[in-house]
Length: 254
Image (tube, rainbow, N blue to C red; front, side, top):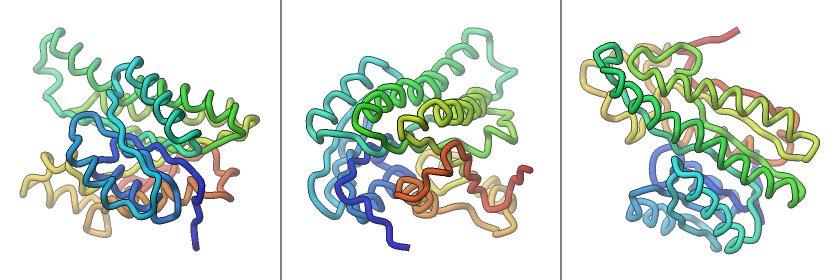
């Protein structure tokens, strides 16, 4: 299937690495003008930008945990690019701790830091971009969730909760925004070969993680990106509200 995103502007958060990087490259290869977003790693973001096929792309910094930063980001992208047709909410943080060993202050910090980025940030950015899309005639919003939203994360309570919240947020948005031709999708991967998950991939745990899937491997970022780009394309509107599992049959829902 040939996917044509010509004249579409795609804002992809956390696109300096991992799934976001792969999505930026594939969106650009399909003809989109890509906004590469980063929080800290400007050098990595500029490397992605320099490798994007086509022209008219943009690099922008923004702190997803800060509502003011997100408002400035959206205004800057619209000013520079004219419009936003596709939003991929990919940026997130993942931390593991022995939760019951924390004191209350430590737990509150652990919880708030993740929720502010993974859930509040997605909600704030989605609201801002959805308002723009409504006035612009429509658009696509694709949220990146996680298998952990369904199976639980015993050492990452806020991560599991934040991703479950992203699932519910996406479905609420899908119902509210469909009359305005704004369509919302969620992709829920399992383990993916990214910088964010590399720290958990010790020699011992890597074997256990790989064995969770009957495919005996974990996902590549380009596989997740391919599904994201498909959802961003024309003809998928009736899938709005869906949650697409991509975990190599390691966790099956009915």
